[in-house]
Each structure stands twice: as structure tokens, then as C-alpha cells.
Image 1 (cartoon, one colour):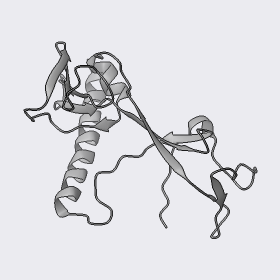
Image 2 (cartoon, helix red, strand yellow; image 1 turned 90 degrees about the vertical axis):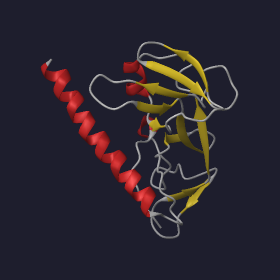
Image 3 (cartoon, helix red, strand yellow; image 1 turned 180 degrees about the horizontal axis):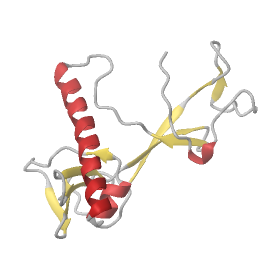
Image 4 (tube, helix red, strand yellow; image 1 turned 60 degrees about the vertical axis):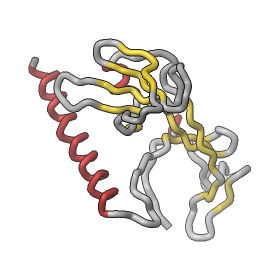
Length: 166
């Protein structure tokens, strides 16, 4: 059994203590928590091309650099290019935004907001992304994940530094 912290929407979650462990949830035989069936909801964050600042602020899931011949440019401005690799010519939840930053690497961000939903949307939290296969982890995946975390920490600090002093 694994535990991880999540930020519950509206600070509300199923609990035995306040009698909300009902519906698709049942009391855990191990402790005072609930075991629940979940559904994953994925919706697009933007219906249009965002600015670079909007994309970085609101998109939380990284995308792969776009390089497939099947990918088409849907829209662009001076800092953001919208790519779709599923044949669609619109900005949807499969769109990957290529964002050029002044102080940092080019970012590839997926236009998706992913939520875990419990009891017909009565309880929700943001789906915590992970990119390492839990059943068959590879050294390559661990290196990529560690590199992504270090890049995030390093480039966030650079942006904070320049935003604060420039």
C-alpha cells in the first residue's frame, strides 16, 4: 500500500469520521480511511492559443518535443506554437504547446487538466503525473524523471531571480 499527499478540491475528501465514506467508497480494513473507485477526467485548459505566461502558469503536464511528421501546427504567436498530432486542427486536450522562454529552455506543455474524481464528482484532486513505470522501472526513466525535476527547480529559481530583480 502506498500513500501520497494530494490537494483536494475545496479541501473536501471522503472520510469515515464525517460519514462521507459512502457511494463508491467503503471503509478500509487497515485504518480509518476510505477505499474508493475513481475516474479520471481530462479536459482542455485552453480553447485558444495562450500567451507564454498563461501557458506556464496554468499547464501542469509536460509534453514530448514535437517531431513526428504526423504533427501539424495549429496556431502560433511569437512565443507559443500549438501542435496537434492526432489529426485535429483545433486547440484541444491533445494539443502540445511549444513555449519559448526568455530565461530557460523551450517547454513542451500538454493542454490537459487531469483530475481524479470520486463519488460522481463529489470529491476531486489533481491527477499527480508520474512518468516512471511502477511495475517495470528502467534506468532511463529514472534519469529522465530526475533530470526533469532538477530542470524545474533550477529554471524556476532563475525565473524568480530575474523577475524579482529586473
